Image 1 (spheres, rainbow, N blue to C red):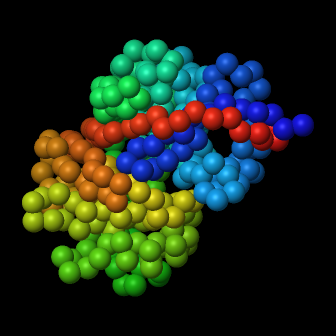
Image 2 (tube, rainbow, N blue to C red):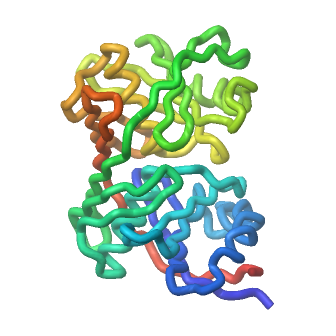
Length: 279
């Protein structure tokens, strides 16, 4: 018999998820593979609830308030999801009553988060995302002759800065699928096409590993901002506006490449529901 599970539909800049709180479930580990196998059905926008992925809130290691596991639309598990983590932090504060400042365990390590409520079920969340590690230039065969900067923000990114007359959306849609699976990226990669605007902001489109085009990508915004600072296209220690299809994030990049990038952006609890799944 299927089990009926409770979920919250959540979103950050239109990057939407089903959040499932399994902190009190003794057998939560056994359910992860089942959720992976059913993720594409659950996330189907016509035959399921619809979403870019699933967010599991689970018990954490000592020193952390809770842990987050992300399951992409295709059932894969990425190391990290910035938009998802903002949603989890908001949920834990607004629904579970955790303090506004918390530390959440992720596949990229423990990350401090601070929630500032802006409405009954919405807020701004500031996260110390950890260091953005520069992994050097890559020239994937699928990249149409472009050079990409490889950056890890807990998960992998390949970033190309485009000219003013180029369309980053069209490039992400056309080149992203093949670059994601290029042999230069053995674990696949997120693919970013970024354009620095006259006002200093960055317009960004992301082909997300395991998801495709999404409304926003928090780790991608952090990786792109770090790459821009290190390329001299933006200033360190100043809030940098990264404009994504779903809205914008404020990113602060330190001078020290080992220092933590800080991301600030919105999150919202949309509705509650129940879902029958076989677990």
